[in-house]
Structure formats: C-alpha cells, structure tokens
Length: 572
Ligand code: DGT
Ligand code: CA
Ligand code: CA
Image 1: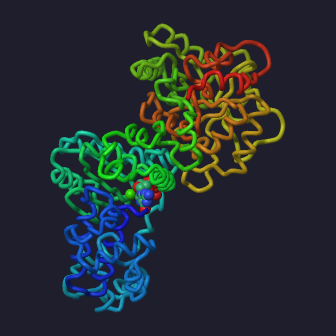
Image 2: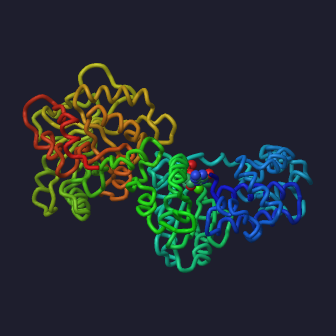
C-alpha cells in the first residue's frame, strides 16, 4: 500500500514537470496537496476507503481522482503523459544542483538547451552571456553544476555515519530537540547509504526546519515544509528531515527505518490481523493501539521488537513471531578493541594515552598495534615502559605483519598478530608464521571491496573464508566494511563456518567509540551474537587461549566448535 509520503513525492514530481512545461497555477496546487499529505494524521488509504479524500485540505476533485488512481494502479497516467512531453535531458537539467524546474524551462525554451552537456557547451560558447537573469556568478555555478561528476550514488556506511552524526550534533547546537534518530539504511547498517533520513520530535517544528535548512553544510534546499524538509549538502548528499509528534515517533521511526521490503511484509501482516499500520501508528478501526515506541508497534502486530539491522525481509518477521530472534552483539559486550594503531615512533606516553582512552570507555582490555616498522628492541622497551604506567586495564600487544615479513627471532613475543594480506586472493601454502609461534592470528585489513560501496567481492570473500577456516584463523570485522575487512554478508558466511570474528574499531591512536559502534552494527547485521565474537567478555572465546602470552605449540588453534559454543549462549 503506497504511503502518504510516496504519493506526496509523486505530486511534487508532477509539480516540477508542470513547471518545466510552463503551467502557471497547477504546480502550486500539487505542491500544496503534497504538503498536506505530509501533515496528514492518518494513512491516506483510510480517507479513500471512507470516501473522504476531498476533505483533505488542497485535495479537490482532480487530485482525489489521482490519489485513487495511484492507490489502485501504483501509477498516475497524467504524470507519465507530462514526462513524455519533456526531453529526458531537460529533466536532468532540472535536477542539477542550483537549477530547478523553472530555470530548466528557460534554458530549454529560450536557448534550446536540452541537457547538461548542451548547457556546458552553450556556456563555453558564450550563449548565456547577457541573458536576463543569468548573471556571471550564476552562469559560473551552472557550469560547475553541469560539469560536476554526478554525486556518488551511495556513500559507504562509515562515512554516512560520520556525516549523519555530525549533522545531528550541529542541529542540536542550534535548536532544542527532544528525540533525534538517523533512520533509513544507515540505521539498518547497510554497507552503503543513499540518502540520510533524520527523524525528530520537537516542541517547535518550524524552528527545527529553519535551523536545519540554514546549516552551513547545506548547499541547496530542495523542499521546506512545516514538518518535512529535504536538502542537499555541499557533497551533493541528500538529507531528509521530518519532525513528528512524540506519540507517533515509534511508528515513524519504524516506517522510515525500512527497509521497504520489511515494511511491505509488515503491512500485509497487519492487514491479515485486521489492523492498519502506517507512519502514525497502529490502528484497529478507529482505535489507536500503538505509535509512541517501536516496541509498541511490533507488539501490536504480535511480534517481538526486531532489531533495525535485521529488517530486510530475510525471515526476521517469522523469527520474531516465533520468538526466535537471535541475541545480537551489543557494544557493551565487547571486552575491548583489538585494533588501535600506534603511530610510527610511538613511545610509552602515546601507548598509555591509547590505553586510557579504552579504559575511559569501560573496556577491560585494549589491543595496541605496533606500526609495521616496529623493531623487536623498540617493542621490548615500549612494553617495559608502559608496564610502569597506570593505565587501569590489560594491554595486549599486537603487530601488523605482511606475508613476507621476516621473523622476529628471539624477540619478546607480542600477544597477537594482525596478518595483512599481500594481494586480493589467498596465496597457496601455509600461513606465514611471522616469527610468532603460538600467537593468535587475526586476518586483518582484508580488502574485498569490489564496488567502493563496502560490499565484499563474493568469490574472494569465500576464498578467504575457506583459507581462514582451514587454519582456524579469526577474521576482522572493522567499521569500514569491505574496504578494510568483511561486509556483513561475508561475516555471516564466516560465522556459519564457525570462524570467530574480531570486531574492531580499526582506529588510530585512540579507541574510538563511534567506530566500534559501526563495527558492532555491521556485526548485528551479520547476525552475530556474543558467542561468535572473540573480543567479548564472558564468551567461550574469551579469554581466548590464543590471546594469552605466547606459548609454544602450533601457530593457531581451531576455535570452539560453533554449535556447542553458540547454541548454549544464544538467547532469543
Ligand atoms: P537508501 O536511502 O537508498 O540507502 O535506502 P533507505 O532504506 O534509507 O530508503 P529511503 O531513504 O528511500 O526511505 C527510507 C525508508 O522509508 C525506507 O527504508 C522505507 C520507507 N519508505 C520509503 N519509501 C517507501 C515506500 O514507497 N513504501 C514503503 N512501504 N516504505 C517506504
Ligand atoms: Ca535513506
Ligand atoms: Ca530518504
């Protein structure tokens, strides 16, 4: 069932097309209708069912018919007819930053410019010079817009998280907000994110809109309404912000977290139960059952609350119904981060600082990683000096070693080795011992990204999982997904093979709670629980035998059998 937001979007699209075609009053009528759909307290299909569409402000005979058509057919023929009258290049012009439908129309009608390329050529040929309303500054901006590479279609999760949390912080500084959540694919910890979806409650929505649309990061305002705004950041990234009433916050958060597929399944379940669920709440007839919290929304549908990271329509609704949702990892389960890089030439002070940053997060342990150029002698000194400092937690020492790294003969042993691959595919033969017999090895800094979007190349990731499984070597799961490790799909596959994962922040100098948070979210998306992760307190894998000071013996041990370890520990 299409949502209010979706129909509002279609109306805005029609308004833009009408603008390009030079219609005078109709575009505003469609925009007004879209705004009132944004603010509707109830699902539009409910109005339609009661035959009350025309009571919605701004919806007259003609628009009511289009709503009905969309509800029935999932399309509006009028929109398709309008689109057919406009060259696709002109639509592309309209979408360029800083242009919009009216400018696109002028370029098209007055100057016969029918696309970004034509715009560039016209500017270079001086055809825009002296045209009324197109000053030099504006033309320079047009040129830039028409030249700028299309913004990256999607942003890797970690970058999206930084952008999103930065925006939230900036917004909070300017205006009082009650609740704020980053919804959408970011909240689901999808490896890449299209646009950011911010959701908030506030006593003063219009002030929030004003603060949001005037943030310094904002390059262009796409839409500004009383409760919903859309902007483009300087990076070209789109951000949607909605202010919702507190009593619908849970329902809105549920809806705008998605995924779309998950929501579709949920809605049809609701229908079977004689309920109606939308971004405002769950209703039976005119009785409101839920809306303020997500837990309440799921409960009203007879389900346990499904963690956002699992909402992809991959069986999670059935699991929730049967009370079989997995117990997922949370940041509080971690004993500590095992991948905090020390800078080249780091001394005791830097190391103690790094350790304290971990202690301040309440960790019990931290894995400090020596720079690749560390020498055994330097390490020996460092360990001795730091041993005297009061850091308040246990330090494990690690070193990054490539395949061909020479052995550290006779040196003080480190506690673990981050084995870094020399190429995209696992080499033949045994793993390099790196001169540390008996020391735990974690395959780290794997780089399996094929897309730039944090998704692992499936063939390579399978090859590495096989390789690690045959040797009982743990795999790293960092926040930067496939760029420096595994994506959640590969992590899930590794878990199914019984391989332990090490969830790390992969950070520099200090333990970074945000980076750990994102790595944990990816682990959750992979379905990992505490029993699947090595650097977790109280897990069968901790204290891992390998993570105690070096002892003689085979380089690595196979981890505890996955079935024994995992089943015992997972709780629904
Ligand atoms: P993205 O932005 O491409 O990374 O992916 P999402 O999942 O963030 O998608 P987005 O931003 O288009 O919409 C945010 C959420 O809103 C989406 O996950 C579910 C909900 N939603 C959006 N459009 C529709 C729709 O047409 N039908 C339904 N059922 N839900 C929708
Ligand atoms: Ca989104
Ligand atoms: Ca969105």
